Amino acid sequence: MNVLLALDAGLSETGWAVMHRQEGIHSGLIQVPGRRRLDAASRISRLLLELDRLVEQWRPEAVAHSRPSGIHWHVPALELLESSLLVWCGDRDLPLHAYTAQKVRGAATGHPNASRDQLAYAVMSRLGLIGQAKSTHEWEAIAVGQYHLARGGNNVSPDAGKGPGPL
Image (cartoon, rainbow, N blue to C red):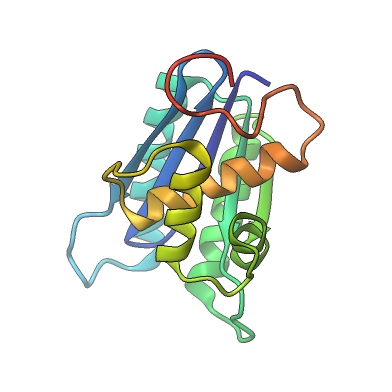
């Protein structure tokens, strides 16, 4: 695999990270503009349009994303987000890999209930990115990508990302 798109998908903010074999790690934040009255379906539709732009630019071969964990009740908006990502990936022939936030955080920090700050610091330390200004959603997306690459049977190194060069 040469390019992975990793997401920390949410209804108002989504962190993304592209793990690129030759160009390292790139990340950003997608924010759905702020009308609070915008329903979940409209927010997801806007998110998917932004994801289309990322796919066009980076041409990923797979998508990995973080699923909320610790929620033990029915949350229709999150279920719609999950199913929309699945359909969106299917329409683009992109395999979708979903991991709970607890598994990702546990692998990155050694503790499944680590805070977002602890996760960010663990990812920064591991990748030599101390001092990089990124949102917590970006760090989560990078951690998801690292987790996926560490688990996968592909040829992309899970420890790379210190800048351009082979992953």
